[in-house]
Amino acid sequence: MATNNHSKWLWISFTAAIIAAGIAARVPYLRGANLSPDATDYISIARNIRRGLGPVLGIKWHFFTADPVIHSAIGERPLLYPLLLAPFCDGDNPARACQYATVAMAAAALALGAVWARSAGLSWQAAAVSAVLLAFNPGLLMCSVYPWTESLYLVWLFALLTVISRVRAPSRSAFLAALLTAVAALTRPSGPAIIPAVLVWCLSQRNYRALIVYVAALIVFFAPWWATVWIVRGNPFYSMQAFHLRVEDIRDGMAAGYGASFPSAIEFIHSHAAILLWKIAQQIVAYLSQLCGPTYLLLLSAFAFIALSDPSDWSDLSDLSDRHQRNGIQQRQRAAIGLAFVLALFHFALPSLVWATFDPTRFMLPCFAMLAIPAIGKADCLITRLATRRARLAAWLAILAVTAFFYADQWRQLYSRLQAGWQRDRAMQVARIEFDAIVRPDAVIAASDPFSLNYYFDRPTVILPEPADSSQRLPILERFLDEYRPDYLLAGRERVSAVAPLVSSGRLRPAGTIETVDLQVFAIAPAWP
Image (tube, rainbow, N blue to C red; front, top):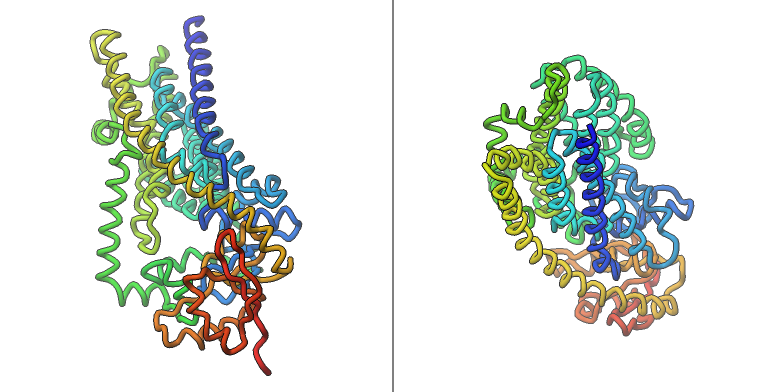
């Protein structure tokens, strides 16, 4: 017993040290605002929640809907993450505070991942190795230093697997699984992928009672959300994500989408079947390459496939002496590991089949997280068969050394990319002073980049249309100005010629220049009666 307690506390101490080191290593990556379109959307919602305006989005970046510039975020973005960011969105530049909050969420995910590793039966050494690979993985690094939802999403995924591993009563575990599914769906658009994964897993386990409890609890947990969406959108199942199935590329609904009509998903798929199948095939290959490439290189995918082909070896993970207790715990361990594989499969399939967006590092992170710990467990099973302790240690060190070689290069590349963003961050903070001297506080802005301008200038922004037919630019821009009624238009010097006809007609009036970032500001006159 004393030996077991010593191993337990050694594992806890070592895992805590690994997590602390992983978080500390991220601090240099938080020196400036790390922004992306998704990040600015979530910060915009969080700012408005902080100001008492509710879940409102101040960025109109697409023309899929007729929503005004300032519109409800319900049905457009999951709301749990910006709700948690809201307390950190005080001041003019909240991104860094939001980034630290996201890193804290990553720490929680790492802790739960370590708990699940032990719940899945891994030795404390294997659990510590899995903590190292997760804590320093370049994909999780990137998704934790940007204000993105992935870190929080992993919290719910690891919590779900821990519940399946630890909770004995199937009905209770199904109820908790439904609760975690609901909060995951409120965290990331891919959250609903958990539902078919759990359903398939329940059917494979022939656990029909748990299946019924899970579905019933899901309905109870989702009912308030469905009612809210119904009130706001007129359809309880409305989601802006559905528009991904109605265009070939998400950009087709952005600047190029003004004035366009979008067919239904069925009509679009029917008329573009060949090209969509080709895009799906390309994405499958790209995502597989990502999982096997430097970012998610584990030397462990082979172990994962071995585990699938020979699941009986998972019995090697448990060292309990009591046969009855051993069998019960092993059954839950194998069930949770099976669910992890099913979750990885569905989180691979969903982005592969949604052709309009492509982001291998972000979209494959849940797959990696679900496969990493079972794969480490399989590696542990194989390594423990080596004859000597020195050979076992050498095997673990070889895995860590090769993986670290690739991870270190990925960390360096990300740091270089972020540095360019920090230079712009400093310039935009100076530009805010110039901007405020020209533009009134309640103005609505039209620009080609509505995301960063919304964040730095803290004004509602709408994306400027870019029609494919340049001969139609003037009438389309005039119609756009009449419909959305922005107060100012911002354009870089290279785009001033595109709006020159509006200046000549008197619709646009030069109002000043933001010299720091070389932006021209035009005041927009109302249309003549």
